[in-house]
Image (tube, rainbow, N blue to C red; front, side):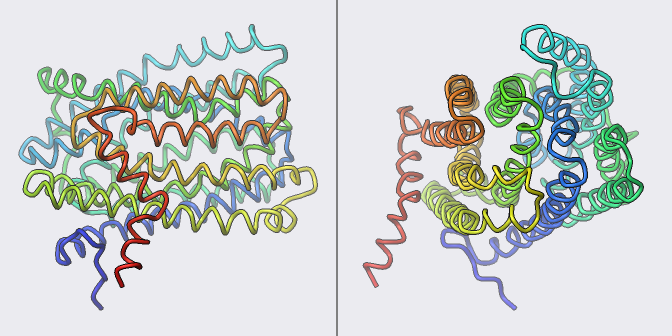
Length: 445
């Protein structure tokens, strides 16, 4: 059966990239289904809102530093592997060493940040210090995930699917066993660390099974300088993105306590769980976009335009359906203490429309080398979100945090319209957001 191609992509090339996207989508669908059932429904109901907040607080705090430890290298390493396939061992070895060193440096900074939060917030954080220490080692294990870039560059999404679904199945089985044994929350914290261990082990095993050898990886000082020179804005961008995606949860805990944090965590999981879709699509199509940029500027523009349209259609459909079923989800799958999450989800889910477009335009900025523009829009989003949450959380609670997220995501997606060199792409994105190209095609018919 022939796969229908997306306008702007050659059918033969699209089939290749779509199949890779399909494997990535299977991986993400498998991952999201497992996580939705186990981590967003079963565990919160088992622990209750307060203990659910206690469990997820360390992961939220560590996520800021985990993003920094990745050094913004994933997309750039994939691009380097596409451009220099003969230097795979040097590129991977150098990137791995840099990320590992960054992770080691991050550990004491995580602990210092926690102590500062304890000192400056009115109440104690949702989780004790020992939970932060356990989860902090996620940063070390995620260094191995640089192997993901290798499979992406070779358009071998099926291996990513095997690794991610396998690791998440192991994680889900472990957590279900902990629920069955009525384990304390501390055991679930250890399970968070094991999530990273399972994933790293999966990448290493598949990489070796495909005839590659980690022992052949080499660190090269000039390659390190090259990677850091181009990726440092992306590293800071990643931190800023995580800041405006997660800071609302930490602020909710500081203002309203861990029970509210635990309820809001279910909203975030149900809403942001869909963000695997834009990541899978752009990851799979990035080689096609880069090739078009090199060979045919007009095709390059068309591919980006249709990418924005695709993102708008998918994200809007998700937002409409979720808005309609949110009350049913919380009545059917959650205990009464989580009921306040339903109206919050109906607001938070619409931020996904702008996040889909943010991810798509991020590929354009990366292709053009506009990493500092990526940094600027991420930082602006962080500033806006902190300001709005400081204002709206004390006033409106969880729903205020959701509206702050919506406004922040919209501002970051639309940021490129206000930069002269990216304004043309901004208008393409804005047209897609209002379905103007689709309406034009319908009128012509």
